[in-house]
Image 1 (cartoon, rainbow, N blue to C red):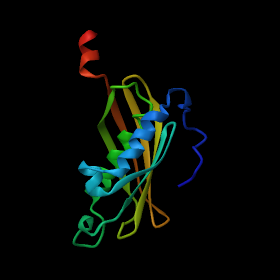
Image 2: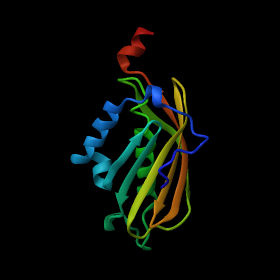
Image 3: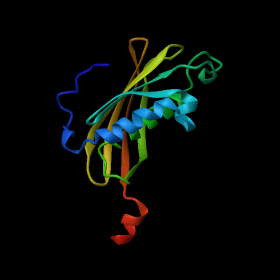
Length: 158
């Protein structure tokens, strides 16, 4: 993955909360839930960008010898949402409303490296793109829409 943000990507430096990014990086120490099962780990957070990786585990390989598409989709969905948390107000949460994946090449071994980039972010929605590489080649591209929700207490005040 490139270390440079695409020239067309919006800038999010003003709303990026490094403390939230650091706290999310600490989750690598004790991963649990689906990210723990998958072995998904955050590598780098930047304003509007997240790089994560996942080792391809034997239990995620299908009978035909390739990574199950659902495992790739779960990894993509995870990084698609997580890239937003350092950009949102405290207490807000993101929920994927739809996403599309294009599987470009079979994944049989090695490591997946996902780069999640925020394409657009409003007070209610976000559009995020994810590129996933395996063994030096692009294995999957995805794009999704996420709903940005207020905490229940904030909704009641409206």
